[in-house]
Length: 237
Image 1 (cartoon, rainbow, N blue to C red):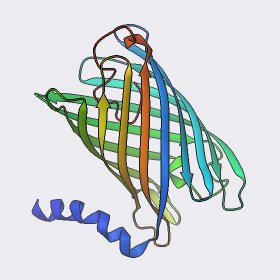
Image 2 (cartoon, one colour; image 1 turned 90 degrees about the vertical axis):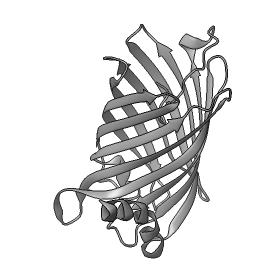
Image 3 (cartoon, rainbow, N blue to C red; image 1 turned 135 degrees about the vertical axis):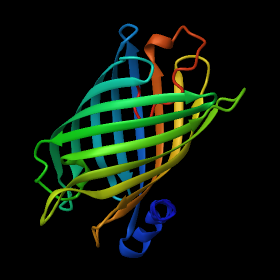
């Protein structure tokens, strides 16, 4: 067990020596609406910027169903436009099937999201392999500070998918994230996070250091004094 814990903690530092790191800024803006006690829909627009300008943009529409207070399946459709090395934009369509678990212990919130994603036209270029077929697993933790709008949070997301020359699915990416959520009275929620997107077993591929900004607006909560959300987990549902 000790060796496993040490290996997981050491993984981020392995990538520094093998791959170069690219800095990016990611922005997310979204709006959510609660249809009833169990159903939610949301629309989100995300952009990703580097020194060369916008590298990726994608609008997304989502539907979520609340089975109980712990389990929430959801389905996303995403249109993806991403810039290639030849400075052209490719167009793709992606479907995400998600299953999210949440559990609260006093002021600590634990989350676990499983995702299967499938993208059309995923072989057009090799710039953003994360937009191909993959299984993803994302554990997360957040802490609700008493009498404060701040919520520290952290997560790790594991990407497994096909790799060139190897059959089956393999761990090829880990995305680390630490950040702060800001929840005010009413429908607004804002998050800022530092993320490190690390490629695994892919020498020569670019890792990414990311500054991420997210803003969400909850239409169903616009007249309520309750916070819009206490852990959006990168989405606006």
